[in-house]
Image 1 (cartoon, rainbow, N blue to C red):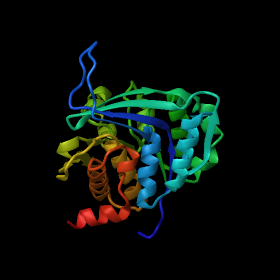
Image 2 (cartoon, rainbow, N blue to C red; image 1 turned 60 degrees about the vertical axis):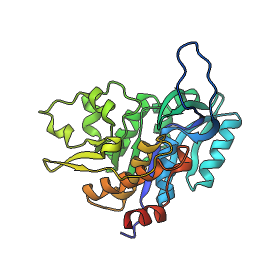
Image 3 (cartoon, rainbow, N blue to C red; image 1 turned 180 degrees about the horizontal axis):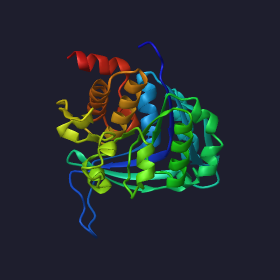
Length: 292
């Protein structure tokens, strides 16, 4: 249990522009919002920070733009304890996400920018980094060819692969078969359309259901872990917090059910603060929360 998990995240690095409003505008309508913030984001970076705050040794593979956002995001990740030596600035703009928070939920528009430069060739150049990991975390805010390449390298080297299939797209069975754990939400799970007779794939699913908790199969037995009751401020990044916590727990060699429960607690705590990365809890906060 004293082992420090070595987690590599291949994924997106964004600047989140968050607007908080009591209601969403109708088409063509202008309304007055209550608050605006710019926060570090991107599913990849969010998950990297989540795992790093819990105490993992985290390395990030990705791209940012040669702009102010890119410099600020690299500095932020470094401050959070994430190794950014494999994040490279490119001559394109840093990715952005426009997030509207209303009634304890959110709507998000992502402009990929530099994330599109995370190609299979780029990932191949980081082969040694992936190979020397306990856990690889991936999402779908970078080109699918890069995700494929990262999974290929990981499986060649016995690295556990977690794929958070978001934002959802069509994924070939041969890719899903190489993944150790899939962590969709309910919308993403429906899109995956995995048939009941594909027990090999269903055993990989860790289904996050927000206020209804987490469901999964463990050696053929369906299990559900109830959600924790917390005072929700912002759900942005909750799924990423779960993935970071889940990966950390697996890296600490916890059994699947305990790893899901731990990720569930990390995700719940993340909703009690505003912002994706700013809401990620520390290991001490999670321990205190679970004791309660």
